[in-house]
Image 1 (tube, rainbow, N blue to C red):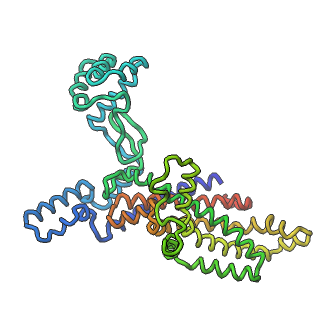
Image 2 (cartoon, one colour):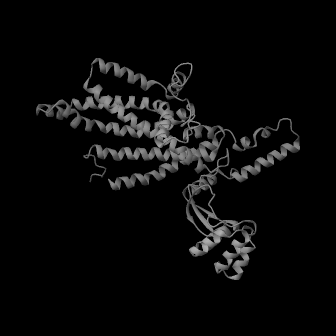
Image 3 (cartoon, rainbow, N blue to C red):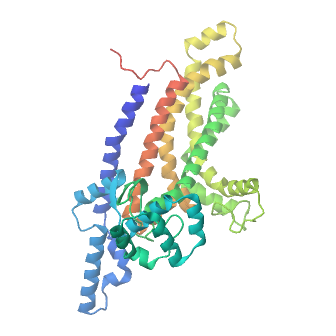
Amino acid sequence: MIQYTIQRLLLLIPTMLGITLISFLILHVAPGDPVDLLVAGAASGDGMSTDKQKNIEETKAELRRQLGLDKPLFVQYLIWLSNLVVSYDPLTPFEQDAHLTDRLIGKLSPDDRRTLAVLEGEDRKRFLLERSQLDPSRQEALTSASFWAGKTIKVEQNYQYTGTGILLYEGSSFNLVTLNLGKSLMDQRPVIDHIRDRLPVTLELSLVGLTIAYVIGIPLGILLSVRQNTATDRSLTTVTYLMWSLPTFWVGMLLIIFLCNKEFLYWFPASGIESFNPDPKWSWLDRFLDHAYHMAMPILATTYSSFAVISRFMRTSMLENLRLDYVRTARAKGLGEYFVVMRHVLRNSLIPIVTLMAALLPALFTGSVFIETIFTLPGMGFLAVQSVVSRDFPTIMAIFTISSFLSLTGILIADLMLKLVDPRISFERRS
């Protein structure tokens, strides 16, 4: 199983390369130019003189150069891919001096650091130079630098990484950075900051929805199989088929109209993940209940079709196993019906249900785009819609990449869970 897991993890690499390459090409082949949106209305040039139109074209050309959009597509993709994996980020002279100052302060004794904290302005700088034991040429270079001349040094963290990725290695003259996804074209914030803020909401919506779907769908499928051809089976089968066929976005809008509207039943909020003005005196339990109250309708809209699908598959799988010989043998031995169903039939019936997770998890990520947009949730789906509208290439690529990786990881987990459900399954090759 370990060998199979390693093989599947290695297979993720070419799969992710293919996904990112296709996504990158589609984004750049699609009509529309992000530079035109950045320049906004001035890009049209309506009613402008020739000189102003020329200045606008020059501005657009400069923006394309700054964003790297003037390079060939394959070069743009390779730059993006190298920044995603690991990139070399040299420090500016200002940052190098700030880094050196932090190292000098770090070498001071505890008593000297306390003294340094009391001093201010030039006295603090003078005291640090006296204790630094730098050679005269290096001292002269530091004191004549723009960092030393124009900044009051702090007791700690004079240098702080402000790049657009995750810091792997911090050196005196360069940094090694991973997941450098660039800056958003919408607000110039690092894309990784947007992902940090939005990803937890989408994960909560998808994972909680998937958990609830299995908790409801599996027992419901068992009930329908043991009550086959009864009134309970027929009525619940009709309801689950109906739920299965209803579009998620349509159900979400119906929930807002009828359960989040003062004209009908104003039971739940129509948007957001928490109250606008929460009471500062609230405990963690109050905040949790408020959050659950806001997330109830989005999770319901995400979950209903999933547990309908799971219950249908579970019912079919249970009925197939109930007709097999080992079930008749167990009954012939005198085992009770409850023991036969729960001990023997259930475990064998879970195999297709676990496999179904590989299809449900990507579907939940896709469905979050509609649910988060309808309920105005600050998640990855809503960010994706905003990014597509504004042609924010860096953010769109980041969302495609992370969503694809999470979906592939979910598929791998579903495959590995088959071994837990049925130990007879082997991933080793037969000779």
